[in-house]
Image (cartoon, rainbow, N blue to C red; front, side, top):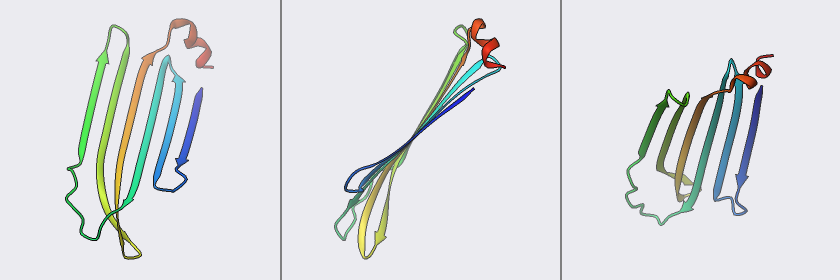
Length: 114
């Protein structure tokens, strides 16, 4: 069984955009949940851009064999300057990825594999 959910949200002034995707898969006694989020914020800046903060990347992986689950998390954050019609814009972005793997209880396994 596979469930998909997509969200595409844009602010009224079109300066902020949030894309979200969630996927749940039950297969072979394993439930996989994958969530992706992409956030963009656009701002016009003066003609002389300042230095931006350094991009960052955070990764976390966790395994728990007693509870039969695994968790992976990745977050990337940064910024980019862009020029459009002789105006300078600063685009800040943040992307996240979450993956959870858990073993299904014995009673649910037989129903999901059919």
